[in-house]
Image (cartoon, rainbow, N blue to C red; front, side):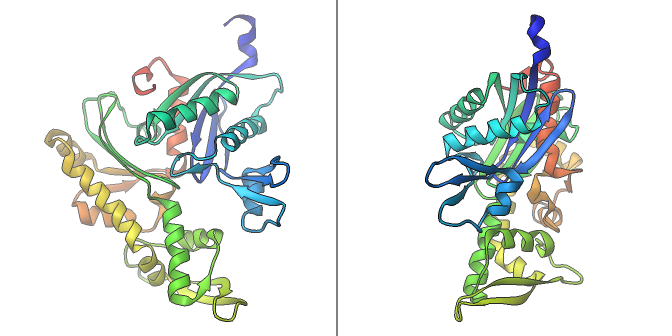
Amino acid sequence: MGIFSSFATDVAIDLGTANTLIYIRGRGIVLNEPSIVAVNRNTRKIVAIGHEAQQMHERTHKDLETIRPLKDGVIADFDVAEQMIKRLIMKVQTKWYTNIRRMVVCVPSGITEVEKRAVRDSSEHAGARQVYLIDEPMAAAIGIGLDVHEPVGNMIVDIGGGTTEIAVIALSGIVIDESIRLAGDQLDNALVQYFRRNHNLLIGQRTAERIKCEVGSAVELDPELELSVKGRDLVSGIPKIRTISSEDVREAIKDPVDQIVAAVVRALERTPPELGADILERGIMLTGGGALLRGLDQRIRRQAELPAYVAEDPLTAVVRGTGKVLENLEYYETVVS
């Protein structure tokens, strides 16, 4: 490495559809911002990224647009994704002359080789000399403290913004994986459609996300919750306030929640019996932002007839695991590509 090693840094990135988290070797998690960029429509120059761009989302004028460069866990807009990665890293670099020696990026387990190539290329163009990729459920398992090298089955359900990753892990590899492009974003869309259809109320994505976080649930609540929601009345065309209940929200998101639970059951049905016995003993671990939906662990427990637990700090599980891999690449060389 020589004299220039002190000017190089190693970075781990959880490049998510909804949020991007960055971990820097020796410093830990240094950034957690929305994966969104505000762009000038005329010049195509980036005006804002992350939290600042999120504030502008659904509030822009004709010269500005907000872009989420990742869709369903993969890069949909190559140029914008590359710029976003570059600028987010610049936000957390303490020295202007520091370059990136190694970068570990996590990717959905169900993506194609072409999509992997796009992630690798974007990371290299953002300045990384060496790029390693790790599957999201593997990173999540490492992040919550599981020993993935053991000959024991662990089941991870990582529910992000764009994808739900379900995997059974043993001996440093993914034995069974089920990746569905249905997660937090689809729950938000289901809420937007439900209020349009049933309440003649047009709400934005940000409002839908707030509703999901504050009163969303996968099982009956006692007591049920209520929330005042602002939106545009589709009949009169003017802004209105409606009071909605957690029962309304549960009905709105029933379909996507059912599909996530069904995917977990499908993965269990394909699991070899010995590993299935391990999962019966150890339980199913839920990570990602979607794991915070009230009662989702109970719902999976009820349907799969197996223990299910929400991991501690599920939002950062993937980046914590990616960071551990970065800190000890030699030990984890079998889980990266």
